Length: 124
Image (cartoon, rainbow, N blue to C red):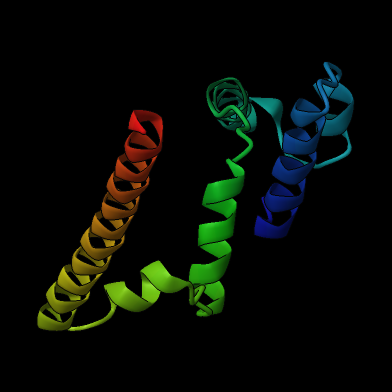
């Protein structure tokens, strides 16, 4: 039995099983290989067809895989900070927190001053 014939037969059987073609005897008869010798391969191919179910990957996974394979990381703010040294990350976090606190304080003071001015007008 030639290796090439066996490979072609198994490829043809696999294609037939994937296409749900039940007439495997016709395919096997085209090759000079007895059915008894390839029956275990046919059972294995059928079991694999039933067991291995095609799954469509999520868009997020496909995007990340593409980025990883192409070696082109997406350079957004989070990735830029993520690749900085830890001390710089901590300093950036502290600066962000201080800026948030400063903006919150200014808003609070503005609301308090506007509220006091309204109370003075109402009181008079």
